[in-house]
View 1: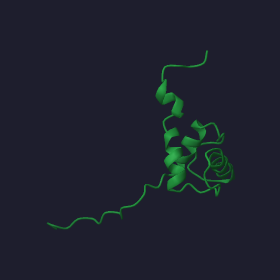
View 2: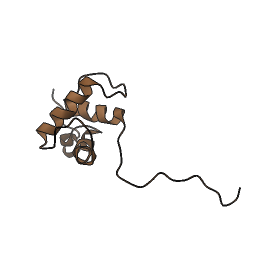
View 3: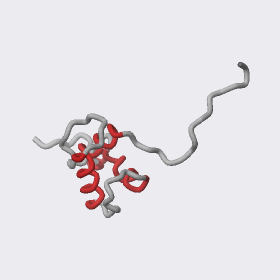
Length: 89
């Protein structure tokens, strides 16, 4: 029908998926499990460790404040962004 469209999702803060969270935690060096898209005990432990290390409330949940810091690790460590060509021999 002309003029009809699907409703858009409500605007709000971005909510990352489990794969993004696990990838960022792995890049941060805190998650050693499989990137399987499931937030289990190992993922939860890594989230809490990340939160503690970054002065965030260590509740094991990736809310807006945690994600604001964690998302920097999604494509690698923040150090990679400043010196992408340096690698250890």
